Each structure stands twice: as structure tokens, then as C-alpha cells.
Length: 195
Figure 1 (cartoon, helix red, strand yellow):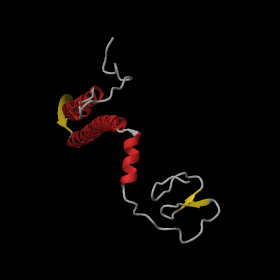
Figure 2 (spheres, one colour):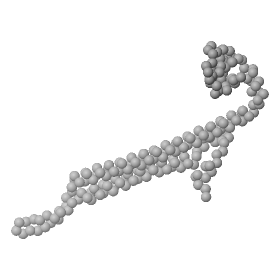
Figure 3 (cartoon, one colour):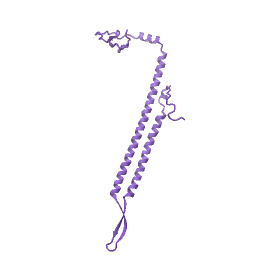
Figure 4 (cartoon, rainbow, N blue to C red):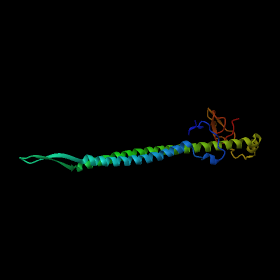
């Protein structure tokens, strides 16, 4: 059964730069999920606000029985609105709704940034593969005789000789005079091989 992860283990070398910048299914899906999370956060925010206001109004209406009269007593039911309880419930609802919205917004930002990191990493890897394949084909077309001819035709500009004798564990380049470690077979300055 095919899904968005099918074929991810096989990597082909891009033939053009346009192939390097093609959108990846994983990054596209991550972008879609970040948009969904943002929308869900807004929907849940408004649901919490509406529910909280409704509950604040219903819980702030207080009914109580009041007894009237001294000799002849009778009871009556009175309703009143508790403003302090209402304001407390509204502030609490607003706080929880704000925290929920911030949590969804941060989660959407994290998923979106993960999508961007994934997409940029894939593009960078594709460009590196593209450049490496072109360098490999360009180097494969140059023969060793052409390399030897090109290196011998270049003028020799480094004719410095060593001013100080090489210390133990180093060798002096005969071409430019640079002291190099015995671990190196090439000069670190001019690139000539040790002879």
C-alpha cells in the first residue's frame, strides 16, 4: 500500500536544478498540518469563549427563597445576578481560551518550521548531489595526460627556499620552502608532493 513515505529509501540523483527544488510530500504534508492546527486552535478558542460566557451567565443567576412577614409569614422566590461571580468566570474563561490558543499557535509554528527545515534540507542535499554528479562527470572527461600537461604548463611562481631548517618531525617543501609535518605527503601551501 503506497503512502507519502513510499519510495523515500531510494534516492535518485537530480538531472536538473529544477528537480532539486521540487516539493517533497513530507514537507508539503507538514505545511498542511500546521495550517490545520492553526485553524483548529481558532475553532477551539471560540468554542471555549462561547461555552465560558454561557456558563458564566447561567452560574451567575442566583435564586433564593425569601421569608416575608412577622405574624403571617410567606415565602417568595427571588432571582438576582451576581456580578462578581460573572466577572470572575469571564476572566477565567478568557485566560483558559488564551492559553489554548497560544498552545495551538506554538504547535503550528513548530510543525511549520519543521516543514521548512525538511524542505530546505532536501533541497540542499539534492543540489549537493547534482553538483557532485556534474563534477564527477566533468572530472571523468579529463584524461590524466591533460592534467599532467596543464600542471607542467603553469608558470612556477613559488621559488622561495626555506629560511630555517626543518625541525624534527617536519620536512621542507623543495618548491616553496614551507615546513610541513611528516604526516603530510603534500605541501600545505603549494600542494606539491614530498619527494
